[in-house]
Image 1 (cartoon, rainbow, N blue to C red):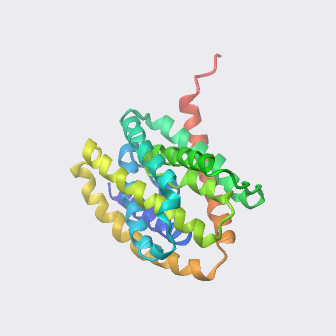
Image 2: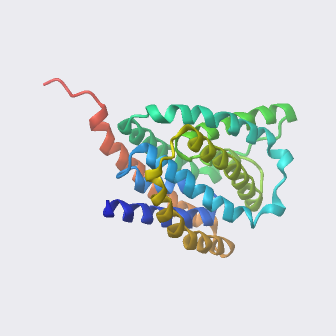
Length: 256
């Protein structure tokens, strides 16, 4: 148990720094540590708790840059997707969970590494743009219900939008703050959060607070693109490692 606490603390610290720097990705980083030693349900709850704690802190510094009216379709889709993810979580197989997470890391992270070379989406009619935002939000909500990965799909989506770095960060943080809050409420209402998890919250919160503040300060003076490349490269390697560890237990044995 003591070793697990150290893993939880280390994952929270590293994920907190990355979230403070980029405005998202707490779940991706933390899960790359926690998926090895925690059951999926506990890891999901800790991820949502840690990411929400970080977003509350970050939200205080970006209130002036957010236009909620432009995010309503995205937020509506996210809130609609959360119950779906929460409903699926109790039936999630640990092996398949690691396989899915590893695949997501190994596929999504290289895409984000190359995202600055991807074409920018052309402006579309307001109705079509609202439908697309709602669909992206729905995917983010489902991912959030499964384990706090609310920012994965929206981050990729906004990387294709013609927005400045600060505007993109503010939009993703706002989506994460709203959907993570709703996810934590859904976890609590559904009984996913148990009394045994509460002491672990006391490990996650203090472990990430200083790193997330440090990451926020570093964000001001460093190239986010360069640091993002380092983080995503490490996450890609982690995803490949998870795939290598989970595939043998999922694939049927070969006939001799």
